[in-house]
Length: 203
Image 1 (cartoon, helix red, strand yellow):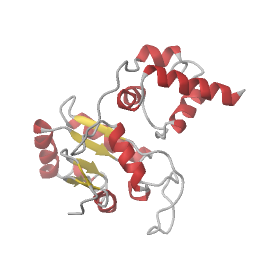
Image 2 (image 1 turned 45 degrees about the vertical axis):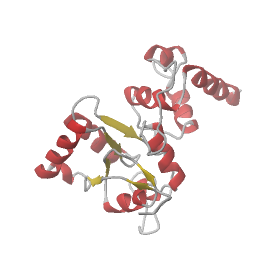
Image 3 (image 1 turned 120 degrees about the horizontal axis):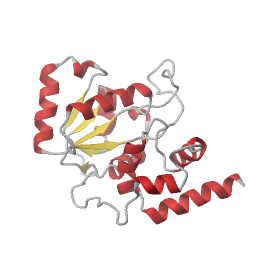
């Protein structure tokens, strides 16, 4: 094994073989591909994922487009509550070298992301790396905080979109998913500071 790889003790679910190959260049972990939507027709693989989730948390890392979020949400519904760690890569527009044209939404998938972006996404999800883990931030962000900061509710769309871009998170992120990732990514104070920067940049 390449000694420079980071070891993750949790299984990681990705969409396809090219995603797995890219991730395997930076981490050492058990990886399972969904083969697009194929996992939902493959009873054996679906059963394997559920069995693993009973023993250990599962990390889900899909593309940031709509299809990736459909796969992510269906997996979440099939795995016991509290056993999924969601890792998100940002919206980056472009085309992977091996493809003739960009995807439907024009976004790079997991395979097109730089290694440092993948590692950052895994850390933000709360992944534990051998030799040093990630801890949940103190003073976590709450639903009420999002409301107070104008990130949800009436007129929140532009500010929320700006925050997602600033934190390198995908546009399809739901409120619940945003709260989950903010638990490891930032504190309430840091979020307030980031929102203040967004307001200042608009003025």
